[in-house]
Amino acid sequence: MRREPMNWIAKKKLSQTRIMIFTANRPICVALILAGLLAGACLQDGFAQNPSQYSLVKSISINEGTPAFLSMDEKARQLYVASSSGINVIDLTKDAMAKEIKIASGARGWALAKALNFGLCIDGQKEMVGYDLRNLGQVFKAKTGKEPEAIACFGSEAYVFNAGDNTAIWYEADDGDEEAKISLPGKPGAAIAAEKENRVYCNIVDKDMVAVLDAKSHKVVGQWPVAPGRTPAGLAVDETNHRLFVSCGNKMLVMLDSIKGSVITTVPIGEGSGSCAYDPDLKLMFASSNDGSITIAREETPERLVVVQTLKTQPGSSVMALDPVTHAVYLAAVGSELQEGARGGGKILVYGIETSTK
Image (cartoon, rainbow, N blue to C red; front, side, top):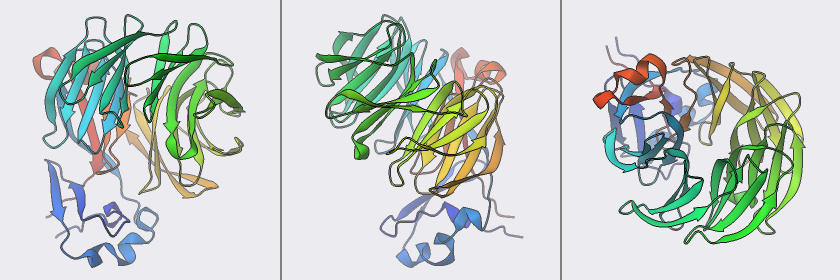
Protein backbone atom coordinates (compact mmCIF):
# COMPACT_ATOMS: atom_id res chain seq x y z
CA MET A 1 0.00 0.00 0.00
CA ARG A 2 1.35 3.39 -0.96
CA ARG A 3 0.78 6.37 1.29
CA GLU A 4 0.61 9.56 -0.75
CA PRO A 5 3.00 12.43 0.07
CA MET A 6 1.56 15.05 2.40
CA ASN A 7 0.04 17.50 -0.05
CA TRP A 8 0.52 20.65 2.00
CA ILE A 9 4.31 20.53 1.66
CA ALA A 10 4.05 22.00 -1.85
CA LYS A 11 4.91 25.65 -2.09
CA LYS A 12 2.10 28.06 -2.78
CA LYS A 13 3.96 30.04 -5.41
CA LEU A 14 3.54 28.57 -8.87
CA SER A 15 6.79 30.10 -10.07
CA GLN A 16 8.83 27.88 -7.75
CA THR A 17 9.84 24.62 -9.37
CA ARG A 18 11.48 22.63 -6.58
CA ILE A 19 10.17 21.24 -3.35
CA MET A 20 11.84 19.16 -0.66
CA ILE A 21 10.15 16.08 0.77
CA PHE A 22 11.74 14.28 3.71
CA THR A 23 12.02 10.52 3.97
CA ALA A 24 13.33 8.62 6.92
CA ASN A 25 16.78 8.42 5.34
CA ARG A 26 17.53 11.51 3.28
CA PRO A 27 15.93 14.52 1.55
CA ILE A 28 14.68 13.95 -1.99
CA CYS A 29 14.68 16.86 -4.46
CA VAL A 30 11.65 16.65 -6.73
CA ALA A 31 11.68 18.49 -10.06
CA LEU A 32 8.19 19.62 -10.96
CA ILE A 33 7.92 19.51 -14.74
CA LEU A 34 4.42 20.93 -14.93
CA ALA A 35 3.50 24.01 -12.91
CA GLY A 36 -0.02 22.64 -12.83
CA LEU A 37 1.11 20.05 -10.30
CA LEU A 38 1.22 22.87 -7.78
CA ALA A 39 -2.31 23.97 -8.49
CA GLY A 40 -5.62 22.62 -7.27
CA ALA A 41 -6.67 21.26 -3.96
CA CYS A 42 -3.13 20.76 -2.60
CA LEU A 43 -2.65 24.53 -2.58
CA GLN A 44 -5.94 25.36 -0.92
CA ASP A 45 -6.17 24.52 2.74
CA GLY A 46 -3.17 22.19 2.91
CA PHE A 47 -2.48 21.73 6.59
CA ALA A 48 -6.06 22.53 7.56
CA GLN A 49 -7.40 19.70 5.40
CA ASN A 50 -4.62 17.22 6.17
CA PRO A 51 -2.97 17.92 9.55
CA SER A 52 0.33 16.17 8.82
CA GLN A 53 2.85 15.78 11.61
CA TYR A 54 6.48 16.75 11.97
CA SER A 55 8.90 14.09 13.18
CA LEU A 56 12.65 13.50 13.55
CA VAL A 57 14.14 12.61 10.17
CA LYS A 58 17.90 12.83 10.72
CA SER A 59 20.73 14.30 12.78
CA ILE A 60 23.88 16.18 11.78
CA SER A 61 27.11 15.86 13.73
CA ILE A 62 28.92 19.05 14.75
CA ASN A 63 32.13 19.76 16.62
CA GLU A 64 32.23 20.07 20.37
CA GLY A 65 30.83 23.11 22.12
CA THR A 66 27.51 24.06 23.66
CA PRO A 67 25.28 25.70 21.00
CA ALA A 68 23.95 29.16 21.85
CA PHE A 69 22.32 30.24 18.60
CA LEU A 70 21.39 28.93 15.14
CA SER A 71 21.26 31.18 12.08
CA MET A 72 19.85 30.06 8.73
CA ASP A 73 21.08 31.29 5.34
CA GLU A 74 18.49 29.63 3.13
CA LYS A 75 19.78 31.10 -0.14
CA ALA A 76 23.38 30.02 0.39
CA ARG A 77 22.10 26.70 1.86
CA GLN A 78 24.12 27.04 5.04
CA LEU A 79 23.29 26.82 8.73
CA TYR A 80 25.54 28.61 11.23
CA VAL A 81 25.84 27.19 14.74
CA ALA A 82 27.24 29.62 17.30
CA SER A 83 28.67 27.67 20.23
CA SER A 84 31.12 27.82 23.11
CA SER A 85 33.89 26.71 20.72
CA GLY A 86 33.13 29.05 17.81
CA ILE A 87 31.02 28.90 14.66
CA ASN A 88 30.15 25.60 12.96
CA VAL A 89 29.06 25.98 9.32
CA ILE A 90 26.75 23.26 8.00
CA ASP A 91 26.32 22.68 4.28
CA LEU A 92 22.60 21.98 3.89
CA THR A 93 23.06 20.43 0.45
CA LYS A 94 25.02 17.64 2.13
CA ASP A 95 23.68 17.92 5.68
CA ALA A 96 27.22 17.88 6.99
CA MET A 97 29.79 20.10 8.66
CA ALA A 98 31.61 22.15 6.03
CA LYS A 99 33.74 24.69 7.85
CA GLU A 100 34.50 25.98 11.31
CA ILE A 101 35.58 29.28 12.83
CA LYS A 102 37.50 28.58 16.04
CA ILE A 103 36.86 31.24 18.69
CA ALA A 104 38.69 30.70 21.97
CA SER A 105 36.23 32.76 24.00
CA GLY A 106 33.20 31.18 22.31
CA ALA A 107 30.37 32.67 20.27
CA ARG A 108 27.28 34.01 22.02
CA GLY A 109 25.42 35.12 18.92
CA TRP A 110 25.58 35.33 15.12
CA ALA A 111 23.77 37.46 12.55
CA LEU A 112 23.95 37.66 8.77
CA ALA A 113 24.46 40.96 6.99
CA LYS A 114 23.30 39.47 3.71
CA ALA A 115 23.60 42.74 1.80
CA LEU A 116 27.35 42.64 2.50
CA ASN A 117 27.88 38.86 2.53
CA PHE A 118 29.20 39.27 6.06
CA GLY A 119 28.57 37.32 9.24
CA LEU A 120 28.72 39.12 12.58
CA CYS A 121 29.57 37.33 15.80
CA ILE A 122 29.31 38.29 19.45
CA ASP A 123 32.22 36.58 21.18
CA GLY A 124 33.08 35.94 24.81
CA GLN A 125 35.41 38.94 24.88
CA LYS A 126 32.45 41.32 24.55
CA GLU A 127 33.34 42.15 20.98
CA MET A 128 31.42 42.12 17.72
CA VAL A 129 33.59 40.45 15.08
CA GLY A 130 32.87 40.71 11.36
CA TYR A 131 33.65 37.84 8.98
CA ASP A 132 33.62 37.69 5.19
CA LEU A 133 31.36 34.75 4.37
CA ARG A 134 33.21 34.01 1.15
CA ASN A 135 36.31 32.83 2.98
CA LEU A 136 35.36 33.20 6.68
CA GLY A 137 38.20 35.64 7.10
CA GLN A 138 38.02 38.19 9.90
CA VAL A 139 37.31 41.72 8.69
CA PHE A 140 37.00 43.82 11.85
CA LYS A 141 36.42 43.90 15.60
CA ALA A 142 34.28 46.36 17.54
CA LYS A 143 33.62 46.75 21.25
CA THR A 144 30.10 46.08 22.51
CA GLY A 145 28.38 47.26 25.67
CA LYS A 146 28.19 45.28 28.91
CA GLU A 147 26.98 41.68 28.64
CA PRO A 148 25.95 41.60 24.96
CA GLU A 149 22.89 39.41 24.69
CA ALA A 150 21.67 39.57 21.08
CA ILE A 151 22.59 40.84 17.64
CA ALA A 152 20.42 41.69 14.64
CA CYS A 153 21.23 42.98 11.15
CA PHE A 154 19.15 45.38 9.09
CA GLY A 155 20.56 45.85 5.59
CA SER A 156 24.10 47.15 6.06
CA GLU A 157 23.51 48.03 9.72
CA ALA A 158 23.97 45.96 12.87
CA TYR A 159 22.46 46.29 16.33
CA VAL A 160 23.94 44.70 19.45
CA PHE A 161 21.70 44.52 22.52
CA ASN A 162 23.52 44.71 25.84
CA ALA A 163 21.90 43.27 28.96
CA GLY A 164 24.49 44.71 31.35
CA ASP A 165 23.72 48.37 30.66
CA ASN A 166 20.28 48.19 28.96
CA THR A 167 21.48 49.60 25.66
CA ALA A 168 21.50 48.84 21.97
CA ILE A 169 24.49 49.94 19.90
CA TRP A 170 24.00 50.73 16.22
CA TYR A 171 27.00 49.92 13.99
CA GLU A 172 27.84 50.07 10.33
CA ALA A 173 28.09 46.38 9.48
CA ASP A 174 30.81 46.75 6.85
CA ASP A 175 33.50 48.08 9.19
CA GLY A 176 32.09 47.94 12.74
CA ASP A 177 32.02 51.72 13.20
CA GLU A 178 29.78 52.64 16.12
CA GLU A 179 27.13 55.15 15.08
CA ALA A 180 24.98 55.56 18.18
CA LYS A 181 24.11 54.09 21.57
CA ILE A 182 20.38 53.72 22.20
CA SER A 183 18.90 53.52 25.71
CA LEU A 184 16.42 50.71 26.23
CA PRO A 185 13.57 50.59 28.78
CA GLY A 186 14.98 47.48 30.48
CA LYS A 187 17.10 44.35 30.10
CA PRO A 188 17.16 43.17 26.46
CA GLY A 189 16.78 39.59 25.30
CA ALA A 190 16.17 38.19 21.83
CA ALA A 191 16.02 40.60 18.88
CA ILE A 192 14.82 40.39 15.28
CA ALA A 193 14.90 42.74 12.28
CA ALA A 194 11.81 43.27 10.11
CA GLU A 195 13.07 45.07 7.00
CA LYS A 196 9.65 45.42 5.36
CA GLU A 197 8.42 47.24 8.45
CA ASN A 198 11.66 49.26 8.90
CA ARG A 199 11.85 48.09 12.48
CA VAL A 200 13.96 46.06 14.86
CA TYR A 201 12.15 44.32 17.72
CA CYS A 202 13.75 43.36 21.03
CA ASN A 203 12.34 41.57 24.05
CA ILE A 204 12.68 43.43 27.33
CA VAL A 205 12.75 40.48 29.67
CA ASP A 206 12.50 42.25 33.05
CA LYS A 207 9.58 44.45 31.98
CA ASP A 208 7.52 41.84 30.08
CA MET A 209 7.47 43.94 26.94
CA VAL A 210 8.87 44.35 23.43
CA ALA A 211 10.89 47.44 22.53
CA VAL A 212 10.47 48.73 18.97
CA LEU A 213 13.39 50.48 17.26
CA ASP A 214 12.78 52.53 14.15
CA ALA A 215 15.52 51.70 11.61
CA LYS A 216 15.44 55.19 10.11
CA SER A 217 15.52 57.38 13.23
CA HIS A 218 17.38 54.74 15.31
CA LYS A 219 15.14 55.53 18.27
CA VAL A 220 12.82 53.49 20.46
CA VAL A 221 9.36 54.24 19.09
CA GLY A 222 7.32 51.67 20.98
CA GLN A 223 7.16 49.76 24.27
CA TRP A 224 4.58 47.00 23.93
CA PRO A 225 3.46 44.89 26.92
CA VAL A 226 3.11 41.18 26.16
CA ALA A 227 0.68 40.50 29.04
CA PRO A 228 -0.75 38.01 29.79
CA GLY A 229 2.66 36.65 28.70
CA ARG A 230 5.56 36.97 31.13
CA THR A 231 9.35 36.81 30.68
CA PRO A 232 9.56 37.05 26.88
CA ALA A 233 12.15 34.73 25.31
CA GLY A 234 11.74 33.98 21.59
CA LEU A 235 10.76 36.32 18.74
CA ALA A 236 9.43 35.79 15.21
CA VAL A 237 7.56 38.00 12.75
CA ASP A 238 5.00 37.61 9.96
CA GLU A 239 5.69 40.73 7.90
CA THR A 240 2.88 40.01 5.42
CA ASN A 241 0.11 40.09 8.00
CA HIS A 242 2.00 42.39 10.42
CA ARG A 243 2.08 39.92 13.28
CA LEU A 244 4.77 39.57 15.94
CA PHE A 245 5.13 36.32 17.90
CA VAL A 246 6.65 36.23 21.39
CA SER A 247 7.23 33.01 23.31
CA CYS A 248 7.11 33.59 27.05
CA GLY A 249 8.37 31.92 30.19
CA ASN A 250 4.89 31.33 31.59
CA LYS A 251 4.19 28.70 28.90
CA MET A 252 2.46 31.07 26.53
CA LEU A 253 2.95 32.22 22.93
CA VAL A 254 1.64 35.74 22.35
CA MET A 255 0.67 37.12 18.93
CA LEU A 256 0.73 40.91 18.62
CA ASP A 257 -0.16 43.40 15.91
CA SER A 258 3.30 44.53 14.77
CA ILE A 259 1.99 47.95 13.71
CA LYS A 260 -0.19 48.89 16.70
CA GLY A 261 1.46 46.75 19.36
CA SER A 262 -1.80 45.29 20.64
CA VAL A 263 -2.09 41.66 21.77
CA ILE A 264 -4.27 39.67 19.35
CA THR A 265 -4.33 36.18 20.87
CA THR A 266 -2.32 33.59 22.79
CA VAL A 267 -1.78 29.82 22.72
CA PRO A 268 -0.13 27.48 25.26
CA ILE A 269 3.42 26.21 24.73
CA GLY A 270 5.92 24.11 26.68
CA GLU A 271 7.84 25.00 29.81
CA GLY A 272 11.16 26.81 29.53
CA SER A 273 10.59 28.90 26.41
CA GLY A 274 13.45 29.12 23.93
CA SER A 275 13.40 30.05 20.23
CA CYS A 276 10.65 31.04 17.79
CA ALA A 277 10.40 30.71 14.01
CA TYR A 278 7.66 31.46 11.50
CA ASP A 279 7.12 29.74 8.13
CA PRO A 280 5.39 32.27 5.82
CA ASP A 281 4.49 29.70 3.14
CA LEU A 282 2.84 27.21 5.47
CA LYS A 283 1.69 29.87 7.95
CA LEU A 284 3.11 27.79 10.78
CA MET A 285 4.60 29.13 13.97
CA PHE A 286 7.21 27.09 15.87
CA ALA A 287 8.08 27.64 19.54
CA SER A 288 10.75 25.45 21.16
CA SER A 289 10.91 24.72 24.87
CA ASN A 290 13.40 23.21 27.31
CA ASP A 291 10.88 20.61 28.44
CA GLY A 292 11.60 18.71 25.23
CA SER A 293 8.89 20.02 22.94
CA ILE A 294 8.23 22.27 19.97
CA THR A 295 4.76 23.73 19.80
CA ILE A 296 3.54 24.12 16.21
CA ALA A 297 0.65 26.54 15.68
CA ARG A 298 -1.10 27.50 12.46
CA GLU A 299 -1.98 31.13 11.75
CA GLU A 300 -5.45 30.43 10.35
CA THR A 301 -6.21 34.13 10.03
CA PRO A 302 -4.36 37.24 11.24
CA GLU A 303 -6.60 37.03 14.32
CA ARG A 304 -6.59 33.29 14.96
CA LEU A 305 -3.72 31.02 16.03
CA VAL A 306 -4.36 27.29 16.57
CA VAL A 307 -1.99 24.64 17.98
CA VAL A 308 -1.79 21.74 15.50
CA GLN A 309 1.03 19.68 17.03
CA THR A 310 3.20 19.36 20.11
CA LEU A 311 6.38 17.80 18.75
CA LYS A 312 8.43 15.74 21.20
CA THR A 313 12.13 16.65 21.07
CA GLN A 314 15.22 16.34 23.28
CA PRO A 315 14.74 17.68 26.87
CA GLY A 316 16.87 20.74 27.53
CA SER A 317 17.09 21.59 23.81
CA SER A 318 15.54 24.88 22.73
CA VAL A 319 18.03 26.50 20.31
CA MET A 320 16.22 26.29 16.96
CA ALA A 321 16.15 27.56 13.37
CA LEU A 322 13.76 27.08 10.44
CA ASP A 323 14.63 26.49 6.79
CA PRO A 324 11.87 28.32 4.86
CA VAL A 325 12.84 26.52 1.64
CA THR A 326 12.38 22.92 2.83
CA HIS A 327 10.26 23.78 5.91
CA ALA A 328 12.63 21.68 8.03
CA VAL A 329 13.28 22.61 11.67
CA TYR A 330 16.82 22.38 13.07
CA LEU A 331 17.31 21.93 16.81
CA ALA A 332 20.62 21.91 18.70
CA ALA A 333 20.59 18.80 20.89
CA VAL A 334 21.83 18.80 24.47
CA GLY A 335 21.97 16.11 27.13
CA SER A 336 22.50 12.53 26.01
CA GLU A 337 22.15 13.43 22.33
CA LEU A 338 24.94 15.98 22.64
CA GLN A 339 27.37 13.31 23.77
CA GLU A 340 26.73 11.06 20.76
CA GLY A 341 28.11 13.33 18.03
CA ALA A 342 31.27 12.78 16.04
CA ARG A 343 34.67 13.61 17.59
CA GLY A 344 33.08 14.10 21.00
CA GLY A 345 30.92 16.88 19.61
CA GLY A 346 27.20 17.41 19.39
CA LYS A 347 24.28 17.02 17.04
CA ILE A 348 21.75 19.11 15.22
CA LEU A 349 18.41 17.30 15.09
CA VAL A 350 16.37 17.79 11.91
CA TYR A 351 12.58 17.59 11.96
CA GLY A 352 10.38 17.52 8.87
CA ILE A 353 7.32 16.03 7.25
CA GLU A 354 7.86 12.34 6.72
CA THR A 355 6.53 10.41 3.75
CA SER A 356 6.87 6.73 2.95
CA THR A 357 6.02 4.21 0.26
CA LYS A 358 4.96 0.67 1.10
